[in-house]
Image (tube, rainbow, N blue to C red; front, side, top):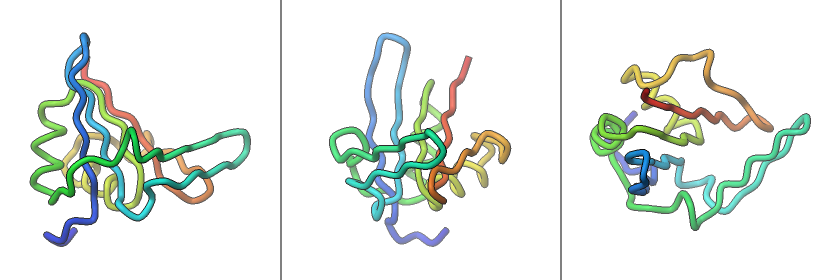
Length: 102
């Protein structure tokens, strides 16, 4: 991934730790549906600060839960061993994964 900011990161403090939402910028505000699965990438939940890969990695290091949507977000999480390939699902071609640290 280039240093160009193609991703949004938004952080939420919760009683169970830090929730991080990571999403490709071009997907915000869109919805996808396939085979009974519905993926809504709401601006309210996902649109945070524009982030480089370094910011995403740092955020995921501190996260207890993460929601990841989009090609760049998933690639960054895979490349840095936060998730595994088999944990990624596709809804109408859009990759999505969740990460939980126990």
